[in-house]
Image 1 (cartoon, rainbow, N blue to C red):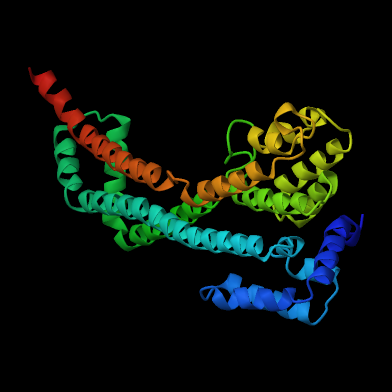
Image 2: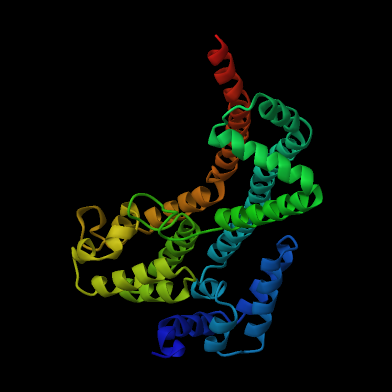
Length: 340
């Protein structure tokens, strides 16, 4: 299936809105001028220029996949609300990147400091115990042997060990950075068995878009297809496409949809035609409320990565100190017990 066919409903809707509002490009340019300086504002200005240049809808969809959904809504107020949400999400993502960077640097610095102190202790303190153990001819447990061998290695090749520790720190930082940036659908979820947490913002956009389309007398199946083709979130797009097929079957079909398993129940309830709570059709008021709620949840969600990594670093240091103390003093306890 060609990409043009996949976005045919979206392109038709964009052409419809453009024909009914010839000043759409100018309005978007004015919105961009009112926005704070950001990449989103620059992209919006470019989109306005493409509209003023009368570029085909297919080309606009390919060039601006993250913004083309704005062109499906006839209300400039709704478009401005959507842009405000985009700015909030952009600012939140920037703050989260900084927080994730701190969450990586803190445990790495703590662990590197602990390893550095360990190596200093192996270079200065442990050799004294090594000489004492050799003098008494004690039979040493494996963990004590490990500490003594490490001490001898540090004493023989201090610069090589320092370089290895530095390389280890870089590798650990890279691994942690990759971990905190993972957004696998199998790991980060809305709720048990539902869409990933990062899809909240996509659902906020879709809920507002559907409310505007339905209020503009667009049939529900077509509105769902337009929203599906305009969403850059693959999970949300597939779920909406499935709902669009079910909407053609009439009342109660949403309950048999695969999307009903993944989408939040209140979102499906707001769309469900023929249900007792929605006898007059989809509830656009509820859709707008859900859009605001999803946007707030997306921006204000908590991230526990920094706390978990910090606690892990403290635990690592504590276990390392305990291991060294037990390794050095266990032979002495054996000696004292034997003498007594």
